Image (cartoon, rainbow, N blue to C red):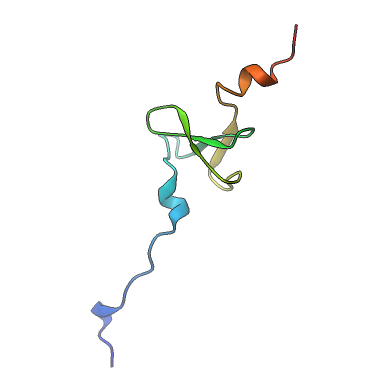
Amino acid sequence: MTQPHLIQQPLPTLDVLAYPRHADGLIHQCAWCRRVLDRAGRFRIWAQALLQGDVSHGMCSSCAPLLRPAR
């Protein structure tokens, strides 16, 4: 007979902990280079793939000049 207090609860998944969420509750990720905005406000965390769910896909300051149309 097992005692209820000895049962281990499921651990949180890495996806929830790996990427910082901002005040709006979203994870901000560049849709082109897949880097994620860190707590310091820089796109320095690289994600292996585009994230799904509570993610705001935009463009980082490194990709913006490359994708801007030439004048």
